[in-house]
Length: 150
Image 1 (cartoon, rainbow, N blue to C red):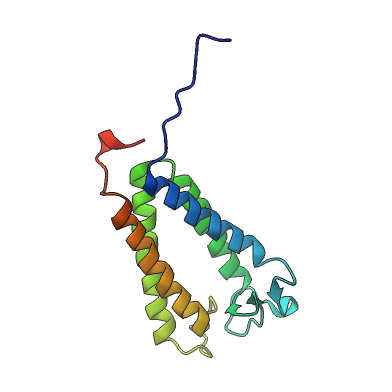
Image 2 (cartoon, rainbow, N blue to C red):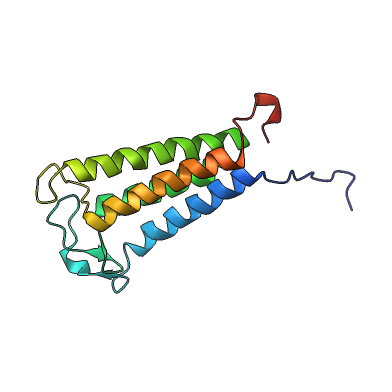
């Protein structure tokens, strides 16, 4: 046994929430590349409203959409390392998803401006994600001071 012991600090609830949300985004990003889980996989485009692929047969996706989910997942896991990073991820990410919800409602699903792509199911999922992420940030912790950071 060595004289050095590693002291592991327990994660705060906001960090645990950010890790969970980040993990789910990472999983969704991976699932988007799996035929069968993604229907009409061969109709997947890089970035276009014409992408015919749908995750679980419901949510219209593209390669870009999947890559965004993967990046959002990695960001969540990385920012969950500190309480302030986790708080910022949930609050900022929730705001981004609310903007995506408004964008999805404002842009015609058949328009070239719908490059992600988004369908009605995506739009309302983005609304729920935005509210849930902001709610988690606000419910699970105030913005910690730098001395509270873990």
